[in-house]
Amino acid sequence: MSHYAWKWGSPPPPVKRHSEVKHALLRNYLIDYFLTLVAMPHQDRIKLTIVDGFCGGGLYISESGHEVPGSPLVILNAIREATLLIETRQERRKPIDLDVELICIDKSKTTLDYLERLLKDRNYGAALAAGKIQLVKGQFDQHCAATIQRAKGRSRISGRAIFVLDQYGYSRVPMHCLRDIFATLPHAEVILTFYIDALISYLNEVNLAGFEQATGIRGGMTAAEIDEMKKSPKWRVHLQSSLYQSLTSQCSAKFYTPFFVRPQRGHGDFWLLHLSQHWKARDVMATTHWNHSNHFSHYGRAGFHMFSTGYITKIDSKDQLQGGFDFSEVAASVSQDTMLEQIPVMLFDIAEDISFEQFFLQLINTTPATRMMVESTLLKLSQLNEIQVLGEDGDESRARVHLKPDHVLRLNRQIRLMF
Image (cartoon, rainbow, N blue to C red; front, top):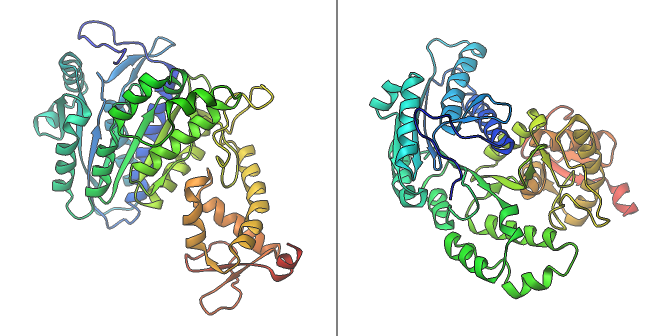
């Protein structure tokens, strides 16, 4: 149950820092999304449906006492900013038309009434009247099928849609909704909040059954296994890892961010997962994290397989507080150094030639690095003669700046003998 309440004429509810952080990421990602989508100046129209599944009243009071926008206004402001940036950066013969329909869902009529008056007050009355912004009362799972069909009807070929599912808690987004989204809409993306601390702190036989029934996430752990696991000092690490693997394996998304996110001034740990069917979308999200590093800390490792031994929590094996992975310049340097060590070992284990595209796609879900960062590391290894990069003719490539998807990677023969 949400702890927020909106009533017109009364001050908007207070917002915790972690929600401001989530909204900052949403804004930044949407702007990056549009700039990536409209890469060619001749494109003049993009049709997209955005579903805000837990929209709230659209306005909050920050911890510093200032009014801050909620997700509906964040989304609408991002569309305006992206349109301006596109027209500024690209020489266009006619303006870009970002044909976006925003569907806002909330279970509270009072909240939606507040949001409607707020939107009209912020000059979105015409968009409401035209149906470009729709306000829908109810639970997200009750309207999921209808919103999927609406998005499909507006974009039959690409099925382009973004579902912003900033649930309060961890049990309001059933797996069948996610599977239906990805089965029906080829270019759909989901930004899902999952309050992992609230779940694992109180997980027992009773609420485990309720969680599985509500979400449809199965096969993680039994109650007996959880009780046994809690005897270990690392039980939170293993439980988080198990739940994460269950969620990502059952939601039907091919690509996802593996980030376990915690704001620097957070309100408990949560996942902010980005799920999609295309690597490019995942790469844009990863790039957004790097471009806006001041918003987040991530408790994971650099390089590949950052969660290979389970999530690294705030407390390490020696009960010491960890600094976290913060997407800073230092973290970028550590990431490249780690990949420089890992990649030759991985190519040795593969034991056969592999294309850059295949190599990257096999590992994309296990690393905070972007495609560009992996590409840069591979080129550096090539310059160090630790690996070979071959062209389509089988000869060694002279690539120094960019790799083509079909460039072949091979461990240098002398390095292989050392292994």
